[in-house]
Length: 389
Image (cartoon, rainbow, N blue to C red):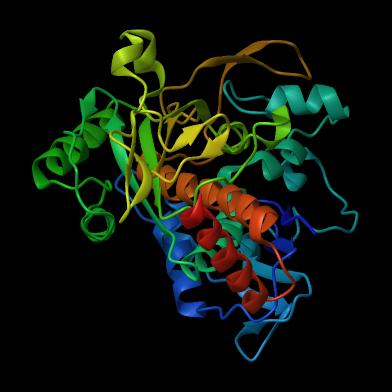
Protein backbone atom coordinates (compact mmCIF):
# COMPACT_ATOMS: atom_id res chain seq x y z
CA UNK A 1 0.00 0.00 0.00
CA UNK A 2 1.22 3.48 -0.84
CA UNK A 3 2.00 5.87 1.98
CA UNK A 4 -0.61 8.65 2.15
CA UNK A 5 -2.22 11.09 4.55
CA UNK A 6 -5.16 13.42 4.96
CA UNK A 7 -5.53 16.44 7.24
CA UNK A 8 -8.64 18.13 8.62
CA UNK A 9 -9.39 21.11 10.83
CA UNK A 10 -9.57 24.89 10.83
CA UNK A 11 -7.24 27.57 12.13
CA UNK A 12 -9.66 28.59 14.93
CA UNK A 13 -11.29 25.17 15.33
CA UNK A 14 -10.65 22.81 18.25
CA UNK A 15 -7.85 20.86 16.58
CA UNK A 16 -5.99 19.76 13.49
CA UNK A 17 -6.23 16.08 12.67
CA UNK A 18 -4.00 13.98 10.43
CA UNK A 19 -4.36 10.33 9.46
CA UNK A 20 -1.39 8.47 8.00
CA UNK A 21 -1.97 5.24 6.14
CA UNK A 22 0.67 2.84 4.88
CA UNK A 23 3.28 2.96 7.66
CA UNK A 24 4.94 -0.38 8.37
CA UNK A 25 4.66 -2.05 11.75
CA UNK A 26 7.41 -1.95 14.39
CA UNK A 27 8.64 1.58 13.63
CA UNK A 28 9.71 3.02 16.99
CA UNK A 29 8.44 6.57 17.40
CA UNK A 30 10.22 9.17 19.52
CA UNK A 31 7.38 11.36 20.78
CA UNK A 32 9.70 14.07 22.12
CA UNK A 33 11.35 14.33 18.71
CA UNK A 34 7.95 14.54 17.03
CA UNK A 35 6.94 17.45 19.25
CA UNK A 36 10.34 19.09 18.80
CA UNK A 37 9.71 19.25 15.05
CA UNK A 38 6.34 20.92 15.66
CA UNK A 39 7.95 23.46 17.96
CA UNK A 40 10.58 24.25 15.32
CA UNK A 41 7.78 25.36 12.97
CA UNK A 42 6.61 27.92 15.54
CA UNK A 43 9.99 29.61 15.90
CA UNK A 44 11.68 32.28 13.83
CA UNK A 45 12.22 36.01 13.91
CA UNK A 46 9.21 37.81 12.44
CA UNK A 47 6.44 35.51 13.62
CA UNK A 48 3.15 36.99 14.86
CA UNK A 49 1.10 36.68 18.06
CA UNK A 50 -0.47 33.32 17.13
CA UNK A 51 2.81 31.56 17.83
CA UNK A 52 2.72 32.96 21.36
CA UNK A 53 -0.74 31.45 21.87
CA UNK A 54 -0.11 27.96 20.49
CA UNK A 55 2.28 25.44 22.04
CA UNK A 56 1.95 22.68 19.50
CA UNK A 57 2.15 19.07 20.60
CA UNK A 58 1.11 15.95 18.71
CA UNK A 59 -1.26 13.54 20.42
CA UNK A 60 -1.24 10.14 18.73
CA UNK A 61 -4.68 8.57 19.13
CA UNK A 62 -4.42 5.54 16.89
CA UNK A 63 -2.01 3.16 15.17
CA UNK A 64 0.71 3.17 17.84
CA UNK A 65 1.03 0.88 20.86
CA UNK A 66 3.83 0.79 23.41
CA UNK A 67 5.89 3.22 21.34
CA UNK A 68 5.73 1.33 18.04
CA UNK A 69 3.51 1.48 14.98
CA UNK A 70 1.18 -1.48 14.51
CA UNK A 71 0.66 -1.24 10.75
CA UNK A 72 -2.77 0.34 11.25
CA UNK A 73 -3.49 3.97 10.26
CA UNK A 74 -1.79 6.44 12.59
CA UNK A 75 -4.06 9.26 13.80
CA UNK A 76 -2.48 12.48 15.10
CA UNK A 77 -4.24 15.39 16.81
CA UNK A 78 -2.72 18.86 17.29
CA UNK A 79 -4.97 20.95 19.52
CA UNK A 80 -5.57 24.66 18.94
CA UNK A 81 -5.23 26.59 22.19
CA UNK A 82 -6.90 29.61 20.59
CA UNK A 83 -10.10 27.57 20.19
CA UNK A 84 -11.32 28.69 23.62
CA UNK A 85 -11.80 32.21 22.23
CA UNK A 86 -13.73 30.93 19.20
CA UNK A 87 -16.00 28.22 20.62
CA UNK A 88 -19.21 30.04 19.67
CA UNK A 89 -18.10 31.42 16.31
CA UNK A 90 -16.65 28.09 15.15
CA UNK A 91 -19.21 25.77 16.74
CA UNK A 92 -20.53 23.06 14.43
CA UNK A 93 -24.09 23.71 15.68
CA UNK A 94 -26.20 26.59 14.27
CA UNK A 95 -25.99 29.80 16.32
CA UNK A 96 -28.32 32.76 16.54
CA UNK A 97 -27.09 36.27 15.97
CA UNK A 98 -26.02 38.82 13.38
CA UNK A 99 -22.90 38.95 11.21
CA UNK A 100 -20.94 40.59 14.01
CA UNK A 101 -21.81 37.77 16.42
CA UNK A 102 -20.84 35.18 13.84
CA UNK A 103 -17.78 37.21 12.83
CA UNK A 104 -18.79 36.86 9.24
CA UNK A 105 -16.12 37.89 6.73
CA UNK A 106 -17.39 39.64 3.60
CA UNK A 107 -14.31 41.63 2.70
CA UNK A 108 -11.77 39.41 0.85
CA UNK A 109 -8.07 40.03 1.44
CA UNK A 110 -5.74 40.31 -1.57
CA UNK A 111 -3.27 37.44 -1.85
CA UNK A 112 -5.46 35.03 0.14
CA UNK A 113 -7.91 32.31 -0.93
CA UNK A 114 -10.88 34.34 0.39
CA UNK A 115 -12.55 35.52 -2.82
CA UNK A 116 -11.65 32.56 -5.06
CA UNK A 117 -12.85 30.09 -2.44
CA UNK A 118 -16.06 32.03 -1.82
CA UNK A 119 -16.86 32.12 -5.53
CA UNK A 120 -15.96 28.44 -6.09
CA UNK A 121 -17.93 27.02 -3.14
CA UNK A 122 -20.70 29.67 -3.21
CA UNK A 123 -19.94 30.76 0.34
CA UNK A 124 -21.13 34.21 1.42
CA UNK A 125 -19.17 34.01 4.67
CA UNK A 126 -15.53 34.03 3.62
CA UNK A 127 -14.51 32.79 7.06
CA UNK A 128 -15.45 29.33 5.79
CA UNK A 129 -12.60 29.70 3.30
CA UNK A 130 -9.92 31.42 5.34
CA UNK A 131 -10.31 29.05 8.29
CA UNK A 132 -9.17 26.09 6.19
CA UNK A 133 -6.82 27.86 3.79
CA UNK A 134 -4.78 29.25 6.70
CA UNK A 135 -1.13 28.24 7.01
CA UNK A 136 -2.07 26.87 10.43
CA UNK A 137 -2.76 23.62 8.51
CA UNK A 138 0.98 23.20 7.97
CA UNK A 139 1.26 22.15 11.63
CA UNK A 140 -0.50 18.92 10.66
CA UNK A 141 1.79 18.48 7.66
CA UNK A 142 4.86 18.97 9.81
CA UNK A 143 3.50 16.31 12.18
CA UNK A 144 3.14 13.73 9.41
CA UNK A 145 6.48 14.77 7.92
CA UNK A 146 8.09 14.31 11.32
CA UNK A 147 6.86 10.71 11.39
CA UNK A 148 8.26 10.23 7.87
CA UNK A 149 11.57 11.74 9.04
CA UNK A 150 11.80 9.09 11.78
CA UNK A 151 11.06 6.40 9.20
CA UNK A 152 13.93 7.60 7.00
CA UNK A 153 16.25 7.93 9.99
CA UNK A 154 15.70 4.23 10.65
CA UNK A 155 17.57 3.63 7.39
CA UNK A 156 20.32 6.21 7.91
CA UNK A 157 18.76 9.01 5.84
CA UNK A 158 19.24 12.53 7.29
CA UNK A 159 17.28 15.73 6.62
CA UNK A 160 18.38 19.35 7.05
CA UNK A 161 16.97 22.75 6.12
CA UNK A 162 18.19 26.31 5.95
CA UNK A 163 17.23 29.81 4.86
CA UNK A 164 19.02 30.96 1.71
CA UNK A 165 17.55 34.44 1.33
CA UNK A 166 15.22 36.88 3.10
CA UNK A 167 14.30 39.77 0.84
CA UNK A 168 17.45 41.39 -0.50
CA UNK A 169 19.78 39.63 1.98
CA UNK A 170 21.33 36.36 0.82
CA UNK A 171 23.26 33.94 3.03
CA UNK A 172 26.79 33.09 1.81
CA UNK A 173 27.30 29.63 0.33
CA UNK A 174 28.97 26.96 2.43
CA UNK A 175 29.78 23.26 2.34
CA UNK A 176 29.11 22.13 5.90
CA UNK A 177 28.57 18.48 6.84
CA UNK A 178 24.86 17.82 7.30
CA UNK A 179 25.07 17.25 11.07
CA UNK A 180 26.83 20.58 11.56
CA UNK A 181 24.32 22.30 9.30
CA UNK A 182 21.45 20.94 11.41
CA UNK A 183 23.10 22.08 14.66
CA UNK A 184 24.04 25.58 13.51
CA UNK A 185 20.74 26.46 11.86
CA UNK A 186 18.89 25.29 14.95
CA UNK A 187 20.76 27.91 16.98
CA UNK A 188 19.74 30.71 14.60
CA UNK A 189 16.48 32.69 14.83
CA UNK A 190 16.40 32.88 11.02
CA UNK A 191 17.90 29.42 10.32
CA UNK A 192 21.19 30.50 8.76
CA UNK A 193 24.65 29.20 9.64
CA UNK A 194 26.56 32.43 10.33
CA UNK A 195 25.90 35.15 12.89
CA UNK A 196 26.65 38.09 10.60
CA UNK A 197 23.92 37.09 8.15
CA UNK A 198 21.54 36.41 11.05
CA UNK A 199 22.04 39.93 12.42
CA UNK A 200 21.48 41.49 9.00
CA UNK A 201 18.33 39.47 8.41
CA UNK A 202 16.76 40.15 11.82
CA UNK A 203 17.41 43.89 11.49
CA UNK A 204 15.91 43.82 7.98
CA UNK A 205 12.78 41.99 9.18
CA UNK A 206 12.36 44.54 11.99
CA UNK A 207 12.61 47.37 9.49
CA UNK A 208 10.00 45.77 7.23
CA UNK A 209 7.65 45.32 10.19
CA UNK A 210 8.02 48.97 11.26
CA UNK A 211 7.06 50.00 7.73
CA UNK A 212 3.85 47.92 7.99
CA UNK A 213 4.99 45.51 5.30
CA UNK A 214 6.07 41.88 4.96
CA UNK A 215 8.92 40.05 3.24
CA UNK A 216 9.51 36.61 1.71
CA UNK A 217 12.56 34.59 0.81
CA UNK A 218 14.14 31.33 -0.35
CA UNK A 219 14.51 28.19 1.77
CA UNK A 220 16.35 24.94 1.12
CA UNK A 221 16.02 21.29 2.12
CA UNK A 222 18.88 18.78 1.90
CA UNK A 223 18.40 15.02 2.27
CA UNK A 224 21.50 12.89 2.57
CA UNK A 225 21.69 9.10 2.33
CA UNK A 226 18.77 8.40 -0.01
CA UNK A 227 19.62 5.33 -2.11
CA UNK A 228 19.92 5.33 -5.88
CA UNK A 229 16.69 4.65 -7.73
CA UNK A 230 13.86 6.30 -5.76
CA UNK A 231 11.23 7.43 -8.25
CA UNK A 232 11.07 6.25 -11.86
CA UNK A 233 11.59 7.45 -15.41
CA UNK A 234 8.83 5.29 -16.91
CA UNK A 235 5.79 7.51 -16.25
CA UNK A 236 5.40 11.24 -15.65
CA UNK A 237 3.67 10.90 -12.27
CA UNK A 238 6.32 8.52 -10.92
CA UNK A 239 9.18 11.01 -11.28
CA UNK A 240 10.19 11.84 -7.72
CA UNK A 241 11.55 15.30 -8.48
CA UNK A 242 8.19 16.17 -10.06
CA UNK A 243 6.30 14.90 -7.03
CA UNK A 244 8.55 16.90 -4.74
CA UNK A 245 7.96 20.02 -6.84
CA UNK A 246 4.18 19.60 -6.51
CA UNK A 247 4.48 19.11 -2.75
CA UNK A 248 6.61 22.24 -2.35
CA UNK A 249 4.17 24.31 -4.39
CA UNK A 250 1.32 23.13 -2.16
CA UNK A 251 2.81 24.97 0.84
CA UNK A 252 0.99 28.20 1.63
CA UNK A 253 2.59 31.25 -0.04
CA UNK A 254 5.15 29.25 -2.06
CA UNK A 255 5.45 30.50 -5.63
CA UNK A 256 8.50 28.70 -7.00
CA UNK A 257 10.61 25.56 -6.65
CA UNK A 258 13.97 24.44 -7.98
CA UNK A 259 16.14 21.34 -7.63
CA UNK A 260 19.93 21.53 -7.59
CA UNK A 261 21.15 24.67 -9.33
CA UNK A 262 17.62 25.08 -10.74
CA UNK A 263 17.07 28.27 -12.73
CA UNK A 264 20.78 28.98 -12.81
CA UNK A 265 21.04 26.19 -15.40
CA UNK A 266 19.40 28.51 -17.92
CA UNK A 267 22.39 30.89 -17.80
CA UNK A 268 25.32 28.50 -18.21
CA UNK A 269 26.57 25.87 -20.64
CA UNK A 270 25.79 22.17 -20.48
CA UNK A 271 29.38 21.33 -19.57
CA UNK A 272 28.86 23.44 -16.42
CA UNK A 273 25.52 21.82 -15.53
CA UNK A 274 25.72 18.04 -15.83
CA UNK A 275 27.38 15.89 -13.19
CA UNK A 276 30.15 13.61 -14.45
CA UNK A 277 29.92 9.92 -13.47
CA UNK A 278 32.75 8.34 -11.48
CA UNK A 279 33.37 4.89 -10.05
CA UNK A 280 35.52 3.55 -7.23
CA UNK A 281 35.28 0.16 -5.47
CA UNK A 282 34.73 1.98 -2.16
CA UNK A 283 31.94 4.35 -3.28
CA UNK A 284 30.60 2.57 -6.35
CA UNK A 285 28.99 4.81 -8.96
CA UNK A 286 28.85 8.45 -7.90
CA UNK A 287 29.00 11.97 -9.32
CA UNK A 288 31.87 14.44 -9.42
CA UNK A 289 29.46 17.29 -8.60
CA UNK A 290 25.84 17.64 -7.54
CA UNK A 291 24.49 20.45 -9.70
CA UNK A 292 21.35 18.45 -10.53
CA UNK A 293 20.42 18.15 -6.86
CA UNK A 294 20.50 14.37 -6.58
CA UNK A 295 18.21 13.62 -9.54
CA UNK A 296 18.52 12.35 -13.09
CA UNK A 297 15.55 11.11 -15.12
CA UNK A 298 13.15 11.61 -12.22
CA UNK A 299 15.18 9.22 -10.03
CA UNK A 300 17.63 9.72 -7.18
CA UNK A 301 21.25 9.14 -8.19
CA UNK A 302 22.73 8.67 -4.72
CA UNK A 303 23.91 12.27 -4.27
CA UNK A 304 22.24 14.54 -1.67
CA UNK A 305 18.76 15.71 -2.62
CA UNK A 306 18.73 19.53 -2.76
CA UNK A 307 15.39 21.35 -3.07
CA UNK A 308 14.65 25.08 -2.77
CA UNK A 309 11.36 26.89 -2.49
CA UNK A 310 10.42 30.54 -2.95
CA UNK A 311 8.02 32.01 -0.43
CA UNK A 312 6.22 35.23 -1.28
CA UNK A 313 5.69 37.89 1.41
CA UNK A 314 2.76 37.24 3.76
CA UNK A 315 -0.27 38.91 2.11
CA UNK A 316 -1.92 40.15 5.32
CA UNK A 317 -0.36 43.60 5.74
CA UNK A 318 -0.53 46.39 8.26
CA UNK A 319 -0.13 48.54 5.16
CA UNK A 320 -3.54 47.58 3.76
CA UNK A 321 -4.23 46.88 0.08
CA UNK A 322 -7.39 47.65 -1.85
CA UNK A 323 -10.20 45.14 -2.22
CA UNK A 324 -13.97 44.99 -2.86
CA UNK A 325 -16.77 44.20 -0.37
CA UNK A 326 -18.78 41.21 -1.71
CA UNK A 327 -22.00 42.63 -0.20
CA UNK A 328 -21.86 46.23 -1.40
CA UNK A 329 -19.32 45.84 -4.25
CA UNK A 330 -17.68 48.98 -2.85
CA UNK A 331 -13.92 49.43 -2.58
CA UNK A 332 -12.25 49.27 0.83
CA UNK A 333 -8.79 48.75 2.30
CA UNK A 334 -8.32 45.14 3.42
CA UNK A 335 -8.61 44.42 7.14
CA UNK A 336 -5.91 42.66 9.16
CA UNK A 337 -6.85 39.42 10.94
CA UNK A 338 -3.38 38.58 12.24
CA UNK A 339 -0.02 38.74 10.55
CA UNK A 340 3.62 37.68 10.51
CA UNK A 341 6.03 40.19 9.03
CA UNK A 342 8.22 37.27 7.92
CA UNK A 343 7.52 33.54 8.12
CA UNK A 344 10.50 32.38 6.03
CA UNK A 345 12.36 30.61 8.89
CA UNK A 346 9.19 28.65 9.72
CA UNK A 347 8.66 27.94 6.03
CA UNK A 348 12.09 26.31 5.99
CA UNK A 349 10.82 23.78 8.54
CA UNK A 350 7.64 23.14 6.56
CA UNK A 351 9.69 22.62 3.38
CA UNK A 352 11.83 20.02 5.16
CA UNK A 353 8.80 18.00 6.13
CA UNK A 354 6.87 18.03 2.87
CA UNK A 355 10.01 17.00 0.97
CA UNK A 356 10.76 14.34 3.57
CA UNK A 357 7.25 12.95 3.14
CA UNK A 358 7.66 12.54 -0.62
CA UNK A 359 11.05 10.86 -0.24
CA UNK A 360 9.63 8.50 2.41
CA UNK A 361 6.71 7.67 0.14
CA UNK A 362 9.05 6.83 -2.74
CA UNK A 363 11.29 4.87 -0.34
CA UNK A 364 8.39 2.63 0.71
CA UNK A 365 7.30 2.18 -2.90
CA UNK A 366 10.78 0.87 -3.67
CA UNK A 367 11.51 -1.17 -0.53
CA UNK A 368 8.09 -1.49 1.05
CA UNK A 369 6.94 -4.28 3.28
CA UNK A 370 4.49 -4.72 6.11
CA UNK A 371 7.14 -4.41 8.83
CA UNK A 372 10.37 -2.52 9.45
CA UNK A 373 12.23 -5.82 9.49
CA UNK A 374 10.98 -6.70 6.00
CA UNK A 375 12.02 -3.30 4.65
CA UNK A 376 15.52 -3.67 6.12
CA UNK A 377 15.85 -7.00 4.33
CA UNK A 378 14.62 -5.54 1.02
CA UNK A 379 17.05 -2.61 1.25
CA UNK A 380 19.95 -4.93 2.10
CA UNK A 381 19.25 -7.09 -0.95
CA UNK A 382 19.06 -4.03 -3.19
CA UNK A 383 22.37 -2.64 -1.91
CA UNK A 384 24.00 -6.00 -2.62
CA UNK A 385 22.55 -5.88 -6.13
CA UNK A 386 24.06 -2.42 -6.67
CA UNK A 387 27.46 -3.63 -5.49
CA UNK A 388 27.38 -6.47 -8.04
CA UNK A 389 26.34 -4.21 -10.95
